[in-house]
Length: 378
Ligand code: PMP
Ligand code: GLN
Image (cartoon, rainbow, N blue to C red; front, side, top):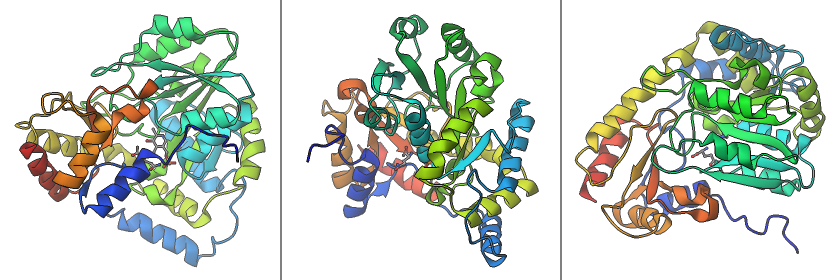
């Protein structure tokens, strides 16, 4: 058979987690917490099952959950998304991203992405016939040069995908970055797919600049988010997307045939949990403490770093340790030193190797202590 995605193999997350398991290593590769989710939240999902929330949710998602999401946007960003028409609950952010791209991208449409880029964007663009236009950012700051972006825009540019806080680098975009994005696309129909799955995980008192804060952008943008990150439940695969009415109606044409609706008891449980407390407000402090613990513990190691500004990832640069490429080094660390990470080159254009590995610190303190002990010996 002739593959529709000839250059795609198995994702690095699956590869590294499997290798980690095989070698019984500490797994700081794939991003997921290794501590339990909230008992209260789990109980609310169980309660939803026992109360009969076991049949299809409405196509756009349980309405109580959509109301809770709308309330969050009012509270945090003073931004209105209509729960009936402008919010759809999805099977994680991944499904939202795929659905947005397939609803809008036609053969030969150009989509700008910034590299290193989360790995689900490019295959989704290409399987729909679109053309990826990469903009490679450079370690360690991964700052965007906005004149370069302006040069890459063309009459064929249909969409720009952005992601702040950024996976894998742990950098965040400033208000000025968002204004520059708005300025260089002003007066066009270019859509923005804003991957904001780490919106609640920003450090050092910084603010998350959601695309919904910028009126001109908001009219052309989709936001995707994930309860997996917010409630430490990556396995539930519940996320959502928000967009103005005219975009959301196109999204739903695809969503209804792609998945129709997603796990109902989890939606109801999350809706009830969001009524009870704005628990996401505690996430910056929760993860900043973990970031700082990890960084303090490895301060004597030979790895170099700038503290993560957001997400639950810390990147470490290792050129003082070896010349090995990052994929080989990550595999050797897993097999020999029993610690798994993610090599950044897989997210870069032409697999550029900056000798950087990504470590997930959404782990128990005990795991972080053990991981740091190993990293200090390398
Ligand atoms: N975008 C980014 C940047 C992510 O890091 C992730 C998951 N780690 C996703 C999208 C996908 O989220 P979900 O698991 O909810 O599909
Ligand atoms: N987003 C997670 C990460 O960056 C992985 C999700 C996945 O395995 N697809 O580690």
